[in-house]
Length: 95
Image 1 (tube, rainbow, N blue to C red):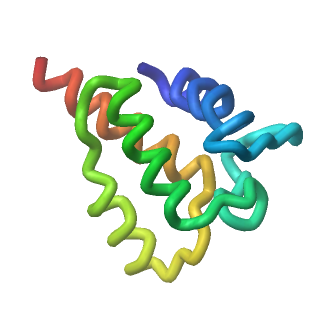
Image 2 (tube, one colour):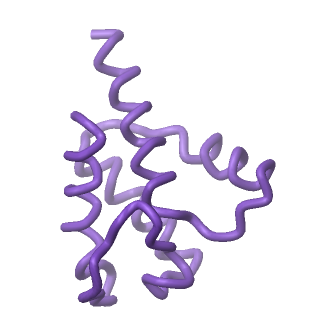
């Protein structure tokens, strides 16, 4: 799955996610907490939803640890897209 497809998938998922509707454009710079109004539990539910949707586990712990190391306080959609794309590409390469 290409990065553009991952972004489109996330856009569709986040428009009406866990009782929160978002009508603005969702792009790589959209922030989960500041822009989408998510809270920590939403991030956990999103991770579980993505794993179920794609039928595989993602290394979200490593993703979050990397964000913390870089001092990132909010998750940009583009960062998550890059992470998911890399995880899926790595997985496809093993097949």
